[in-house]
Image (cartoon, rainbow, N blue to C red; front, top):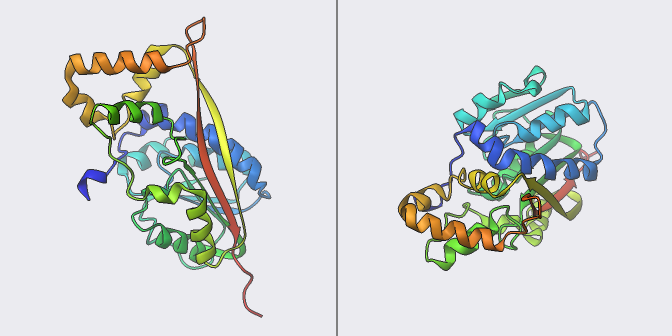
Length: 265
């Protein structure tokens, strides 16, 4: 549906808006996965390569393939230092352009709720993963108030301007993740919450970053200067601003991992 489409086409803007958050949560996520070195990875919905770069820097992979539907995001990803190893291409999470059982690990970072049919996306990750390989994901807890822009979302709903939601917000729930992973035939399914904090220099830094949200931009344009001024004041009043003007803000993601069964004897 058109009203639920949220497009990320600006790789540089995404880097400031969400790339920092992605790496903060991604570091904790990788610590939890404890993957061995030397694996072949596929990063499904890699966006501008923020998490992909963590894989390259921290996991000593022998191969990383990044897939994303946005040409702008892929273009930005190809300019990252991670591109010395990682390969990036346009692709669909529900129809991955790879043969069966080619990767040791498949991962989705902040993507699962954007996949129109999450079960198909998980099934594709399982398909391209080797027996005994891992399939994992983390997503902002958008229904539980964990999304980095949750404060803004609350204020917009209060004035009757609810922002567009991702196509499948239910997929961000831990209970739904467990069902998706088990229904896909994965074993040893585990989940956890990931809470991270990001510090902004001051309110102007926070507000400028917030305005990069593609879901909120149409609403900001419709509010006009006066409406934006009122919204800005409401947001400022609710933020934990330190004496030095900095703002430390927390967000929460849900994570899941599972293992593909070994091949039949």
